[in-house]
Amino acid sequence: MTQTTTELESLLMQRSLTDTALLAAADAAEDFRILPDVTVIKVGGQSVIDRGRAAVFPLVDEIVQVRQQHKLLIGTGAGTRARHLYSIGAGLGLPAGVLSQLGSSVADQNAAMLGQLLAKHGISQVSGAGLSALPLFLQEVNAVVFSGMPPYKLWMRPSPDGVIPPYRTDAGCFLMAEQFGCKAMVFVKDENGLYTANPKTSKNATFIPKMSVDEMKAAGLHDSILEFPVLDLLQQARHVREVQVINGLVPGNLTRALAGEHVGTIITAS
Image (tube, rainbow, N blue to C red; front, side):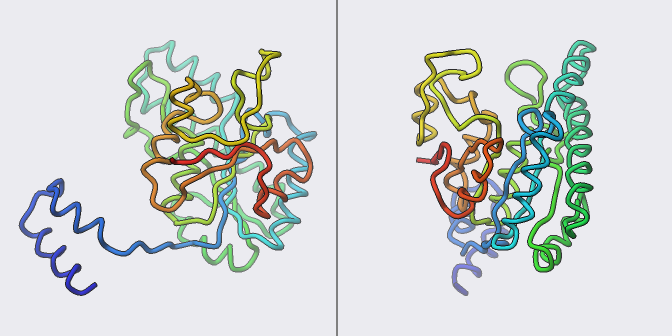
């Protein structure tokens, strides 16, 4: 390890940061998982929170129960209000970076509401610099709420098509799971998982219990259940090599998924 570190330091002083030898030496460095016992769950904005009390309250009760056995980072989606803002912003000709800030504001609102509902149980909402307190919150109450939108804002990478921010709350929550080296990533939505077509509009849609990223792309399903960039992020990840999409409107699904059961659709990196 000392030799590798010495070699890496030497290369850093002499080479470009995109040099292949430098990248190989950096890649050989040992991985350190920061929160290996934590699961990230993403609560959908449009699929769950926008449905109001009927959908949110049972999920809140389930979160309160499962956090007794599991450490949770709870990310929130943006949902319908963000889509409305994207529509107005795109119509005004605003760029992806500005639309990203608008979407962030809605995800922040959803995190605030979910945080208030969980407050009496000691579960707090954190943002920005507050993320540094995550280990303390997890140690004390096993859970914390955060806004799922990644903080790219004006620095959002433009989409190849249109101006809708490509990295939204699915990507933001996955990046949290990967960068902290978390145990698992669960997306809580309003469908059982991945289908061959949109089950809301197609009667012939068939449920798919497990599929790889390459298989999804080959079947043209790469933008059907998760934001497209999440699939590329999954294939590039070191720690989180699969995610599960579950139906959060079915009581007990989250509990079962956190216990390691195959509840919805598992999407694998390879």
